[in-house]
Amino acid sequence: MKKVTLFLSGIFAFLLISVSASAQTAPGFYAGKWDVLIKGTPNGDVHLMFTLAEKDGSLNGTFTDPESKKEVPLTKVESADGKVTVFFTISSYDVNLALEKVDDTHVKGSLMAMFDATGERVKDEAGK
Image (spheres, rainbow, N blue to C red):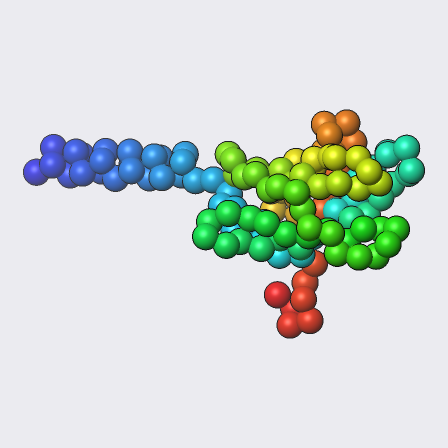
């Protein structure tokens, strides 16, 4: 009986380790509104507001152009390995912003792998 209990305990431990090792941030985590601060650009620190939506397991969205204050569609959104990269055009430059989860309300990353970025989820009027 001890061998059976030990064997079942071993299987349970293996399953627990397997499940936790393969857990990644789903693309759905990034859905919502994000206030992203990009630090040290030639124009100084820049705040960009991104709105990402998930549809059929993939993300798309917009950002608010800081000069015109208009919503601009993102060129492309890629998600892999729990990270997301958004591609967009700003001031006639095609750029990308890579982000990864820090906690439930924060992300970090970089613009073009040159400028550090931090972001915070923006709560809607309902407090979500």
